[in-house]
Length: 430
Image: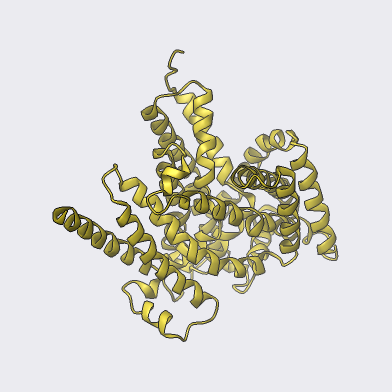
């Protein structure tokens, strides 16, 4: 078999495909809210948001592709099944526990409530997830085809929205208290995009293999280029939306929910007709995202835990998603914060360790780092649950960078150095 060489067209197509995978319509509500609450420091907040979203997507994609999407290799230096466990946790969070319910809730709050405020939320969620179930079980390609057209239309409307926001004059941005970099970083967690590479990188690698790319170096290089294209697109969209969120202070209430703010911005900058079009596109894009995530959830679980079938996991996922979606976007996010504060630092640490590891980092180093970071992130999670006044949380709060929410970075660096020193001394003693 002849080796196919990479060309620019293949990379661009794959880059846009990767962008479409991460560009969930439900994520549009986060940057404007961040901008509104950041005032004149919106760019710093946007930087934090893109660090925990766009940059970590790239790091994750590079880390997983370096292991050729072999999750056993990705986590086996921590323990034999650690990579698989991380994958199952990530797809559960990005699937029926948090992201899929949010697609239904966002569709209702953005696409239905502004026009039919008395429509029953439970009935809508039932209809939405019934459709998700039918299309997922039948493996319908209709949504895939529609998605190819929805993403460009959505991007076009968002481009108009951002341009109108940029040209919206006579707005004086407020100076608001707080660490905006940290605020943006934590808000970026909510998209859950950077947990995605754990199970999406294999899609991109398989796509390149199907195109005839088989050499490991070429596969990794192609993934890097595709990741850069996707990340660049996400940065442009999210930065633009953060900016118009900051400028919306002239007509928006700072106490608005994320979805209400997005609707208000659309009404003021686009007018009712374009707002209707935006709501329809967001709704269909959320439907497409829900189907894709539910299918991924059922596929991964049926392969990892084959005791139950794909159909069983689809049914389980859609029932859980339906129940949680009734809570609404803001309540889902309240639930997600303690979970994400625990999971994210561990996943980020594993990404970085795999990128640094050229085969010369001992499993002991992995264990030391993951345990140390896990202890810090557990304290942040407990604190977010409201149990702040205890010895454990108070002790962790004294660590450097804790006030800004970045103590896990300090602990990662220190534990990595300790691990390397310990393993080096151990080798010398042996």
